[in-house]
Length: 129
Ligand SMILES: [Zn+2]
Picture 1: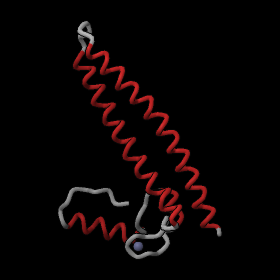
Picture 2 (picture 1 turned 90 degrees about the vertical axis):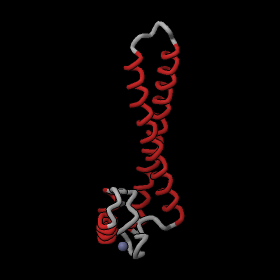
Picture 3 (picture 1 turned 135 degrees about the vertical axis):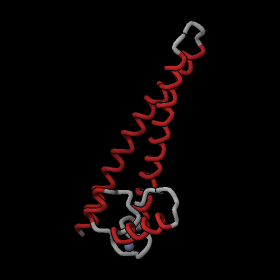
């Protein structure tokens, strides 16, 4: 049952990370909102800087949204019992790999094979998990 215990602790870490992202992304959204309001102020002359900050923050929001999706998918797999099983060969992914890459969907061997296939097809790096 060591594995089940390890997975439970990964799940806890994912949930902690999830709460953290929700908190930070709330703050980020408020910043974007504040910038948008500032932009409407005709007195405000540093528009280029506002645009740059807005652009940076939008990307941050996007990255946070993507990470939340990955976390939710991993938690769903934990709840459904599919977590830690390679989607290609069905074997258990070793715990060291899961600890380092909790979103991993493939065992190391299949991840490498998948990456090599993607590369040979010339498609631009979809990160292999
Ligand atoms: Zn595999």
